[in-house]
Amino acid sequence: MRFRIIVAVLILMLDFLFAPFLLIFPLYAKDYGFKEGLPKWEAYIKERPLSGISLLLKKEDIKTTWLWLQPAVFAALISVLFPIYGRRKRKTDELGLPEAAGQGQHGTARWRTEKEISKTFTVWNTNNNPPKGGFVVGFNSSNSKAWLDTGDTHGLVIGATRSGKSRRIILPTIWTLARAGESMIVSDPKGELHSYSFKYLKELGYKVILIDLRNPYRGNQWNPVLEIATKLEIGDYSTASQNAWDIANIITNQQPHIGVDPIWPQSQESLTAALILAVASSAPHEAKHLGSVYEILHRLGADGGELLDKYFRSVPREHPAASAYGVAALSEDRLRSSIFTGTAAQLRLWSDPAVIWLTSDQDHELDAVGKEKAAVFIVIPDERSTRNVLATLYISQAYQALVDLANKNGGRLAQRVNFVLDEFGNLPPIPDFDKKITVAAGRGMRFLLAVQDISQIKAKYRELAQTITGNCAVWVYILTTDLETARIISGKTGQYTIRTESYSSQVKHTDYSHGTTEGLTGRPLLLPDEVLRWPQDRALILQARQNPAILPLPDLSMWPASKDLIPSALEELKKEVMSVPVWIPEIEFLEEEKNEEIDRTNKNLLSKLR
Image 1 (spheres, rainbow, N blue to C red):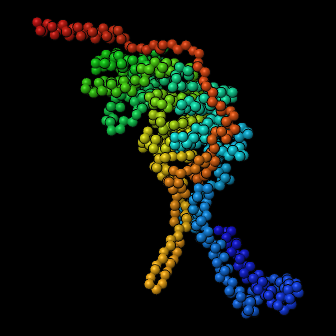
Image 2 (image 1 turned 180 degrees about the vertical axis):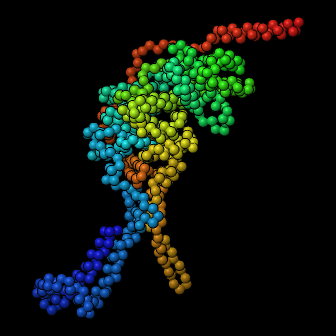
Image 3 (image 1 turned 90 degrees about the vertical axis):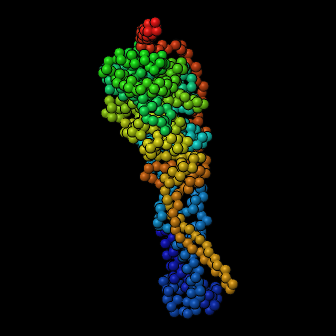
């Protein structure tokens, strides 16, 4: 607006000071001829450069001609100060949106300039090492300039299936973190992320850990029960019990219990926790795993769980396993069968020998990523979801191990850890994730959550979804087909002021009249349908406390990273896969005791019949 005012002032100065001189030149040309009149006219202007207004007052013929020119001058001023008609056809950018108008009466949202974007993100020339690890939010392939979110904040990536989340953001982010030497835990649908990056990471000196849920025998092993056993051995019953309940909660809530009486999942969770504590406490070292938990329930939980009751009655009352079993022990006979059956269904995954082997031993420390350069890849089968719970279980336990490490280190990890969770919406819910994501950044842990739409988070976390998404300070939008997600993003872009125009006409017998009415109104920077039509190779950036931004986001093939991240087949690990022993408490003694009791009952019945 300031520029327009300056132009308007210049027009007025030319109109009052210079236009009269132009109008007087024909008089000089008439009296002296063009050749002699021109220099005399120029000399007059030099002698009296500010006499334009006096000419208008003294010479009536000049004044008359000048007045005839004023409508044109007035129109020029209006077009400069209020460019209505030109504005109506102009667009703000490649998106084809109407330009802002007014003074922000209905909203002041706007697109950030590149200079403004560079103030809130780290600008990195990819020809050099990054100053700090960060999540990728944009990249200009023409000048090798990338924009990174390097702060202690969390990010949310929204991209529908086949929109290119992995190749546009996830893989470049892994490459960026690797060059900065930061650790990462990556959920890896289909195993492509590990395939592209594990050789490059090893070249940079990374310890690469593979938890392969598709083919467990070719990856590393991890035992969820081992830490509980360690805590029990040192007498830390409180922590052991809490860890057991965490595992039980994850296993029990693999699927949401909608419309189900809470007593059922709570009872199943209690029974699972009790079995885990029993195995962690009493099983031999090689059988302290979840396979033994399933086997105990399978073998001792039949016939109403009578044998299971006898076992837990032999456990000291002060033991946390006995306390956890209390809910199941108090259930009525008609409910016990359903509780045992439901719990067995939740634990059925550990009837799979490959899963038992995967979770029967520990060949790495869960907090290794917080001590050294390390990368953990959790390969998740995309063709079935039965093993997804293992990914949630590993992430939850790794987080807790890192919290414990941070507490020993003054509250923050020496090595920053990045949780890059691709297809986060397909994982079973992580317990207390709203609390985890709230405090994680301060401990040196960041989350990058990649989902297809916001509805996925709402389906898994329900009323906690708002807290989770609200803790993501940066949203990177690529594409969605979900209208509700489009509405949310549209609302987050904010409102701005535009000019409106309405046309009316009236026809009568004797005349015809028409008119145009102009006004101001507000509209979102992006309407929901415009969000749904978002252009390819562009990222919409929504950052806390900032106006929205648009950044280029090309495919991995346009990055220098494409030379380093080359898909490689993982060689089959040449290690002997041993059968894993399972443990059942005093099964022979308990079965003999039960058979003897049955025999006694039969003898009593026969004696009565006689």
